[in-house]
Length: 390
Image (cartoon, rainbow, N blue to C red; front, side, top):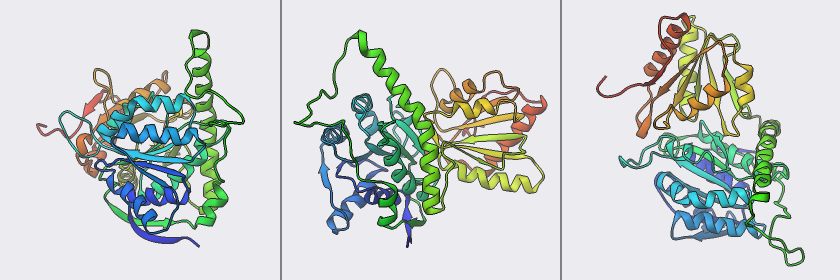
């Protein structure tokens, strides 16, 4: 029988790691990720888990050692944040290109400069083309559950691709809530022991992290793309299987909230989705047809969903906690592309950078702007909201 505990999202994610029975954890601390790897170390020190814990000298080494362990057929885990994730950048493509199913948690945090230790999503969004599956969570409970699901997705023979689970820094990593912890037997029935042929084996020698010339490079990238297409199905089916086990579902790649008859909707990623839910309920009480589209999977991107929603809504707003300088908000670029030719007006709201709060009244402002856009009173545009000089 599962138990409940009052946990931060970092601690909840650590429980997800423990329950997944990794063989190797490589750790280098960086705020606001530190308490996650500390909690994992506590499990080992207290005799609650059995794995090799590697304390390394840098984030680059953390991913390199995880890669080496995965090459030997081990289930591996690591974590990072912000500049640490950027320092890992070189190793990310080695892991994904060689198809090793490492799971990593990134505690989303702004990147320098201006220097800031608080949370936005620019660190992970900068890694969007690294070949990693990228999932975003809304709560500590979802963090625990998604870590477990991530191993099931990553290790699927049709996928064999690493997964980055993203948790908003401080907003989730250092705030506490009641979290339900599954029993080990439940997780064992859901996540079997890791078995792979993609490993070093003296009886079956092979080349790993190989070099290839132009004649075969395209074929390797094609196989990676094929794995991401398979991952779209697996993210949904793994979530459905987990829901049968625990009663908790996160919609797979996308979760709609009160969007069936909505006239305008906001697309949200991560913890802000929880605030949007509250505002949706309040505005529905006032008779306004608003809804939420929670984007859980950024890579692979659910373009088929947004293609199918081209003419469903009058206006779609995208909340971005990241910006691609010289263009648009990072998520907005993807949504706008997928909805090309839509009758819906699409607008972008860039907020929450560097950990700035995203209050309810700001989200209500977004919805009201969308109603104005839908009626033709306002122009759809990219807007920074909540700036100090406004």
